[in-house]
Image 1 (cartoon, chains in turn cyan, brown):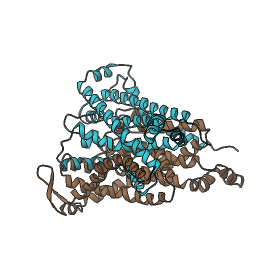
Image 2 (cartoon, rainbow over the protein chains, first blue to last red; image 1 turned 90 degrees about the horizontal axis):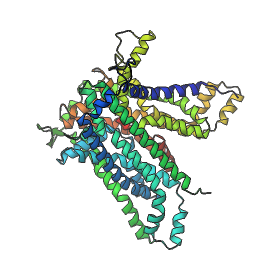
Image 3 (cartoon, chains in turn cyan, blue; image 1 turned 135 degrees about the horizontal axis):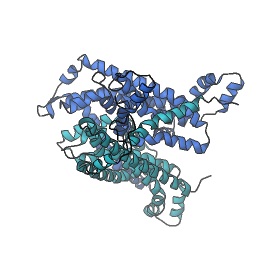
Image 4 (cartoon, chains in turn red, cyan; image 1 turned 90 degrees about the vertical axis):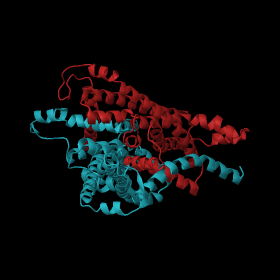
Length: 264
Length: 301
């Protein structure tokens, strides 16, 4: 039967719509024209200005530190959470699941303001440490979901086999389950890293003086500085970084799927 | 393993995340409500005494207008996203397996990128000297002095752009399981393709549509970056007000009360769906969460 081409046309238009701003932004970071309405020639000037900006480097280091810390912490919390959620189906786990799931759907601004209020109420000054706490909080849910979905393909009989061969629960976890789960954890960790590097709203609320990150930097440049083309460059660099991290995360997910023996 | 031992292991594995999320998610959320009943202290902190003053202040007629604008823009964004997502999800679900994965990846990819970067990209496109303005001028579709930025239309456009994948993914997840032979049967019986789409396909993927509606509506209500960067003075949303009360005005109880209102706008639809999903099995909920890419950064939303 002849298929109606309409849905396919809409799909391609939508893909164009999704990528148009990204492509124009990237192209403009190499454009001599300040506002990018027209193409006036290729230049690396803006990138040169970007590299020479000290504040950008400070923000870059802050972003990396926070992302690394939040990734490590959320990988530990997320993996234990996923193991518990996978293994038991008790009332505790229902509550646990709700705790993990809800932050995924709550608007970021609510999370940002509630954390700011908490830090203010206990008299904690805001800075890199408060950003780390906030980022870990939203990353936990993403890591848990990623590891949990890996666990669902996991062949539990491998653990039973290890136990039958005399390994205790701890050894079978360390030697059998963890190595097989590792690509899933890395995949979740890479997503956490991406989310942390890219987060704006929550960071904005819990950041203090001197704790600027890359997205905060971009925002304040948009608001206060006329250096439009330099923002293009910084944005392009961040887009590239995100694409690499997300593709790496996907690649790790796939490793796992190939190595796990298929059941039934 | 003895029963007591198992119970202990379960607690040991659950405790880290349960405690962390209780301290940094549950308690802060409750604190928002509590602080809205406190007074503001002159130094920008939170006063000790309890008061209803903040809530009384919110009956000021400015606020209902902002709440109303937030709701209609969110509703329009949701409608726009679902209308665009339906044909997209349909088209992807009919592709070969290999292409489906590629397409789903292509749709999600931009949405892991920084929210502020994406909104900035639109600011650039809609700029008076920008690409889109030049394009529209050369096609005679715009006047030289027409303003593309800083209005509700710009907020709507960028919101649809930002939240579209949250609509496509759950609808696609449902469409992937849809039995397309039903459509062929309908067409064999003489239904035109659009009629079959409307009467057979849409009801068949109802659950995906419900999920998509929520996943777009919730971050829209919480929107702050979009109205701040592409909206104008006359298109403020609740998110902007929360920001204003938190930073320039430094009135935290006021910001809390506004956040509590926003939370109600989010929790009501969410609660309805939680009840709905309770009847489904948990894997289903998980799959929907995953297919949403579970991302808000939109939330940035």
